[in-house]
Image 1 (cartoon, rainbow, N blue to C red):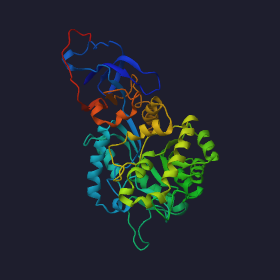
Image 2 (image 1 turned 90 degrees about the vertical axis):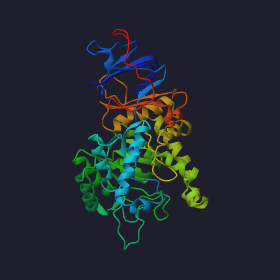
Image 3 (image 1 turned 60 degrees about the vertical axis):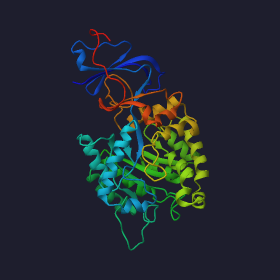
Length: 427
């Protein structure tokens, strides 16, 4: 059994408890077996069989969870780029992106849709140990209405790319059933529009309550969940009423939608994907021109989103990071930007942001008894950070500061000296 002793760290355990100095964490195999000061190596292990790593005050924290993942979005400029990219190249890119996410300190992720069966094959290969990547909940193609923001091809051309078009309760049921048959853990439904597409903007609601409810019924009958793209107040209200599990965006909620989210906060998760808005405003003009970016209304929309995320956070709704990464101006690898946005733009405390990315992450993964916090008995998904993210949350974006990344007790990254020689059993 592989044994690791992380010594003398600043522990941020993910529960929201105050950080603790001079803490050791013992990992035996894939689990955390002891936490405390001046821990000793168990007598059953010889000292040369234990990795002992002196942290000198570096931060120990749980691996993070990315809650809005698109591995098959790969430096695209247009949605059509995703649709027409050969599936073989899409698969290769997804493997690369999964490794990038893991090495960014995100040891788990929730997919918010994928091209074809790529997510499902990727998840299974990761679980078999064939490739490197985070624990993941796999999604399939997005379920979208005719005329939605992903319905971009002429009517005489039908492309099975990032989305399946389904209209009416029966068609929605059929597509959702087919995606779960393929092995998806959850299914994404686009209930509102998106303002980069002029014919189906973010102010539009594109599915009815009955259509959304049909998707939810099919998912829940299988013990699965529905993840939605919902920006408008009306779409959010439909989703909450229909029993949806994860709501992406929720930007333009009114007071009624806000109250509905608060009332259902113990079962729902909100993933605003703020970095999509921020990065589009920062860099979108380089690809589309300033006039096109202005026409999206994202500048005003971001301010509305920030106000609403602040009040949802203050009301105790679980708001999680996950930034819609994968387009050219919003590339993979920058996942921790969302944590900085939560602090600097939404007004969350750094500690609460870490809880959101770790403890709440374990909950959205439905693995809260195994991951998300540094506690005895949990799986050893652990980061060692050269610095204190409570002082500077942006440090988590610097991959060079991620000195150790453990997933399931195994090294993903280890740039610190490992010692296997000590005097006696006490260390």
